[in-house]
Length: 244
Image (cartoon, rainbow, N blue to C red):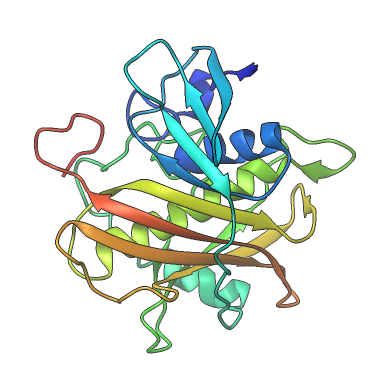
């Protein structure tokens, strides 16, 4: 059994850990590619215990049932065409939550409006593909020998997809409930990348409260450096974690 914690700095939906960041730490702890299911809000500043179970692993605190579950990853990732940094910056200017009085996830370290956020504010591209994108400068918060901790890219890809899922078919903020990602090459602190989000191999519309998405990160030469696939459930009016 192994434990790790999600610090308050790495908050996502208010009062809970960011899904992409936590998923990266979970996979790193196991040491093999995983598909992760987020079962409930991820507690902050709490020992999270990794337990092996038949067919996979579970992540527990002292609450009822697992916080997350994981199994060996078998699903393929989906690719998309790269987007230039200029085009991604243009998409940022169309960030759909910019004009909202209350941000859906005001405390998120990845995409919130707070000063310390990574600023993953993806908006629609103007290329007719329906994709969302944003330019992203890899921070040096967890830098080692000039490399940014890959878990930060997992978090950024998660949030880029969140804006696509929640705003490309009308405003409908949602929670990540399934996540898988991979880092293809180390991320360099201070370098600018583009994050692109789209429906991947999922339907482009909602199925009730459910929707899937994909995202990819590209360097300035158009090389894919990381990618993800995720599944989402629309938030409800009575959930305090997301402003709907």
